[in-house]
Amino acid sequence: MEDVTHAYDEEQFIVQNQKEIIQILNELAKHHEMIKISFSHDTCLTNVISVDAHNNVVYLDIGIDDAFNNRLLASHHVVFSKEDGVRIKWISDQLTLATLKDGKAIKIALPHKLMRLQRREFFRLTTPIVNPVPCIIPIPDAESPDANRVLELTLVDVSLGGIGVIVANPLNEVFVIGANFDQCRINFPEIGETNLTLQVRNIRPITMKDGTVKHRVGLQFISPSRGNEGLINRYTFNLERQAMALASKL
Image (tube, rainbow, N blue to C red):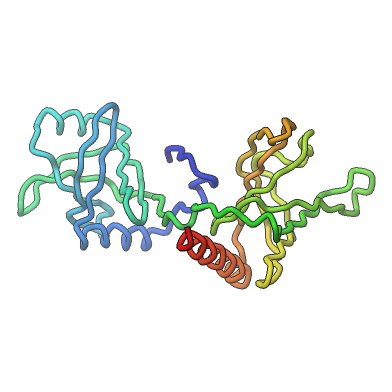
């Protein structure tokens, strides 16, 4: 999948279940959703005509420009994407021309995986400074391998996909991309405390107002339980409600 400039990696939104993929594509066809085709330096719009689940193929509308169609059919890396509302994207490496009863169409193999996410899932909400949200991360103790010590950090932002924290310089060596931390506790004010796994997804240095350099570490929620998801949803909902109330007074 192509990279996107959001706080959390798209991997957590990858759908690989074939029945779910078929359902998503059928919904695109049912509602005549416009899909952008991108390859090389060309783009155009199309829509899903139908899904043949028995033969594992998908049919899409073809353009009227024969030269463009020839370039499209010759391409081996075509990105199909829907950007508005629920975002959907997949990649196909082989397109062929098919003839349906209503005319010609593009035929592709049913994708083995596609990305589906709602913008709210990666929309970051800044957490309050006055009532900070603590995050306790257990890490191995180098001096006592059988014991753990904890890092006490403060959230700077939160989304349904994960959190952002500020870490002092020099950056602790445990923070590397892909590192997992189990039994992390986040105490959401007036909501409750989570106990979940966090994974490091991105790290970037930031310069504070006093000139010191710290690091913003993006941490993704890994398979949170239903109870933890409920806490996360309630807290983000409260933050959104507070932000809207504040905006209405401006």
